[in-house]
Amino acid sequence: MPNQQKTMELLEEASQKYERAKALHEEEDFETAVQLLQEAVKTNEVALGKYHKSTIKAYWRLGRSQLHLDMPAALVALKRAIRTCELSYGRDHTATKSLYEDVSKCLEGEGKVDDVVATSSSHSSSCGDSQQMDASSGKPNSG
Image 1 (cartoon, rainbow, N blue to C red):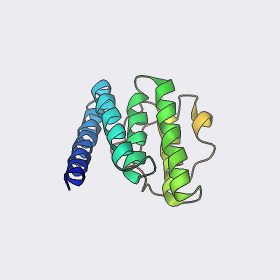
Image 2: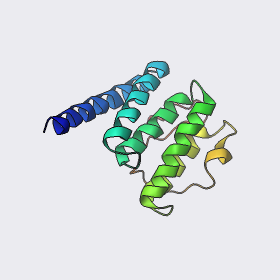
Image 3: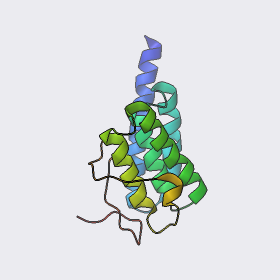
C-alpha cells in the first residue's frame, strides 16, 4: 500500500497548500497564492482527477487569485472550473449555478463577465468556498 500512502500524503499537502493560498489571497499576496494553488491543482488532478470537487474548487480559487495578476490566465482557470463543474454536476445543479454566480461577482467591473458567465443565479455555493466580493475592489465583503 505504499502508493495509497503516498497519494494520501500528496493530497494532504495539496490541501495545506490550498488553505495557505486562501489565507495569502486574503493578505493580498496573490503571487504566492497563485504558485501554491497551481501546485495544489496539479496534485489534485493527478490524485483525484479533474472532475473532483476539490480540483474544481482549486481552479476556482486559482482564478480568483489570478484576477489580480493576469486576467487571461484567470479566465482560463475560471472557465475550467465552470466547465468541469457543469460536466460533473450538470448545468442546473446548485453547485454549478453557484459557481456561475461567484465568477460573475468576481469579474464584475472587469468587462469580462460575458466571456465566462452567461447567466447567474441566487443559489448558495457548494462547489467553491464562496465569499461575497466587493465589485469595485474585488476583495471580499465583510459581512
